[in-house]
Length: 352
Image (cartoon, rainbow, N blue to C red; front, top):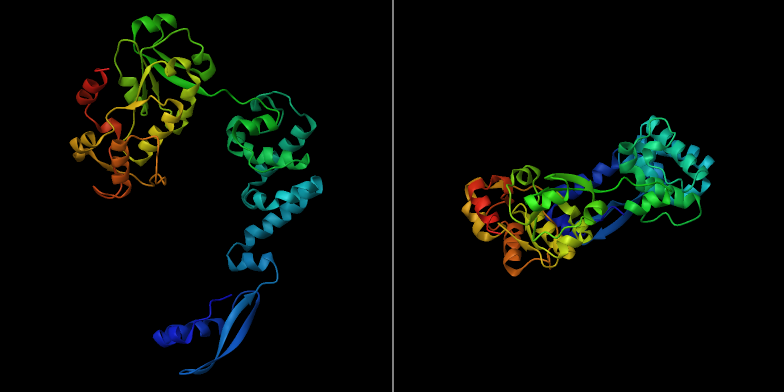
């Protein structure tokens, strides 16, 4: 439907309505126009375009300016379905793959799918698969679609396959998630052979035989590297939104934990998420006083967090979060933690 104007609308904007109707009388793209006659009290009889009827998806693609992509996807889909007819069930989700993949990437995808179907549950890392051009960097952003295709061909449900489940469905071993920590106490460093900077699989770090008094979660990598010795303290660096892994560290659950991130909407969203893993977590230098003390160092946040409510925040934290989202102090205000003067920051941190 083209959205017929009413007579009242035509009276308010007669030239615009006339131009709109004339534009449909001119030559146009594929499809057929349906016209309707209207008898209006003031403007009299009018013949207006009511609907554009498109015969098929190709015509719709042409109107959307996507005909070339559509034709390429249809051609490639025919080849794919010759091998695996069941994939017709998820063909809408494969459109971007079929329309946009380079030929080499599409061939690699088909080779991988065929190999995994022939070799289920190998328990290999992606690097071990004997497929030309395949590596973990290629597979990581595509693992969900590969798993979905596998599940569909095997007769299952290809919906919602992601993350570790995707690797499991492909019968592959996922590279272990690692965590970077700074050991800020000499006695704790002695437990790990004197090492002060560790990047290791989370499960290994979880089994360390120590009990830190304090765990400091710091978002920025260089800020974490700048930390000096603190008694009984371990720092966890650069997790971003992956803070849920903190729940896998038993020694963190028993420690006094503090989070220091940017004062922007995403910083508070991460803080909220971190408290789902460590409910006793406190924040540091993420308050209204710190924000306004360093107002000369504010920068601008691009896309803000969309969450209206973050129940993991304290009332004071949520007040700042709300102010940032409402642009109470300016458009997209943010204070990145590395902009805070180090003398001020270290005095707050060393008071642990």
